Length: 297
Ligand SMILES: N[C@@H](CCC(=O)N[C@@H](CS)C(=O)NCC(=O)O)C(=O)O
Image (tube, rainbow, N blue to C red):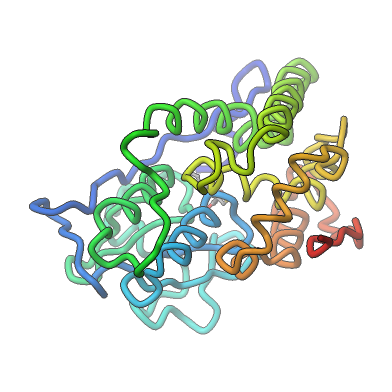
């Protein structure tokens, strides 16, 4: 399936549904077990970035393995340089087709492979982090944060929706729009959402108060890509992240944590978007800037 089939007649980008939505859960077909599940991710992809952050925040690196794909996607899709040590595949598409030979959607990261069953369990990115937080709780490192506390779930879910529509997916709706109207609508939502979050973060350290939660993990990958990519490539140029004092300070505070910093690769992020998304950037030229100091206090 090509991106074109996700563009509506009004020029709006309408994201494909996630095809693989099985759950890793106790008593189910895919029970949680250390070493049984393998995550496929790209440092470039914001949806995959979330799962890499959570895996590290919860100390699950020895429990759930990971393969990082090459940031440049060719016509065959995501590639594992040198071949995947777990499954032997060279392209991620092979795992999708091994699971469902009739699958015609995009072969996306993040996705989780069940090594024992030899099939993909899920490419349902919102569920992957929640699964690491819940089903894998017995293996969390001592002192790991509770990113999805039961007392806050409703609030977290509600804010996550605002963040998804306005920002995480809002920037894609702006960038992939093929009509002025669809772009205007999306870019308005992007900056209305940033304004709202700026106000919220002026009053608290994290989105739901003092403690880090799933909402922070979902917001950060979009902020990390904002000035480097979305501002120019996706035409989200009304303001930059660095123009928002509270949001910019918050983003740098998160970046100071190893789970966020170690999984943020600005070079791969830029090369992926500017080289791979030729629908937006036909020349494939990667801009040199912007110069931003993420380590500023
Ligand atoms: N699974 C979701 C989100 C994940 C997603 O879009 N990942 C992108 C990278 S950021 C991807 O893997 N794209 C592969 C492609 O477009 O062929 C979807 O299908 O929209």
